[in-house]
Amino acid sequence: MEIRTQKIKIKVVCCVCRRMILNEKGEWVNGTFDEKKEDNLSHGYCPECGEKVRETYRLFAETMSDRK
Image (cartoon, rainbow, N blue to C red; front, side, top):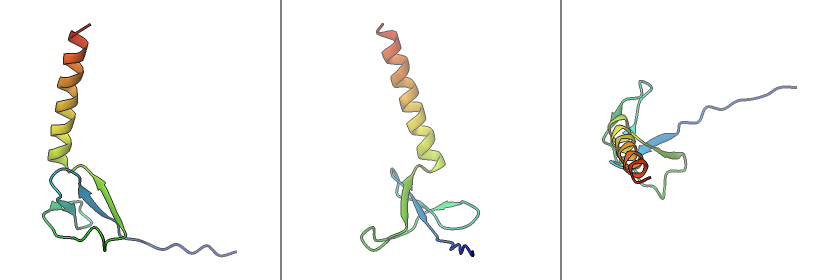
């Protein structure tokens, strides 16, 4: 039995700033793409936006815990 594997390149796009990873080093850069034409597209957070989101949720959680 032979199992064949295929490497598929998936473009990861930041769901906040729309930058995307374009190279194997994982560098986030500005790029253009057409979501309707891209079939190997995934969303996530770039490091900068991810940090802002984590900070926002941390402050929210602290505010909610203070209300108790």
